[in-house]
Image (cartoon, rainbow, N blue to C red):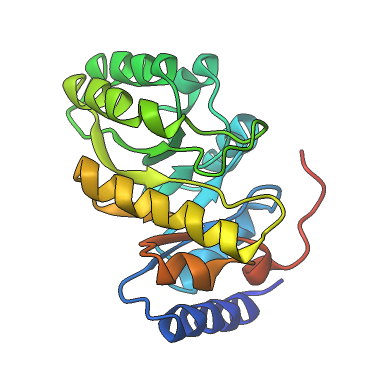
Length: 223
């Protein structure tokens, strides 16, 4: 992996997005299990953010690069409340908030921070009804968004993961549902679409795509 290759792949991804009708769609480069070079390569290639899934891996990477020299970090993995304290000063956007206990912990950390600042989050919604997928039930979304807003969190959007079997009809339905929910809740961002379903996501209104394999190639073994 090298910067020029990643930059070429990012350009190819932006072309895919444009051909699907996307305008101003941000790329969150999914760098889980890749080294710190992936953060630097994503920045060089003009991505809008990097996405990490694992707390300990993220903490280790954050210690290798100054905040001013890196892209914004989006946490996109399953959130455990006991990990939020150690991640709070590293994460710029929490994309996988999906239950009341996580909202409560973020509100607590936000209220107790030493300096002023925003705590940006996207609510993860399970729009596929798969029981093994993260995300709240769509019926719970408004309650959780209201809880977060009342606690001072900046709810800027919704996030979802397409169906495991990647059936295009079900994928489109899942993404369309998220778009409808975002309009009802008055949020701007729709984080949906990965390497295999970018086009459908963009066609259904995605503003952020989370892509790793198409940029960095075969993923190393998980840490």
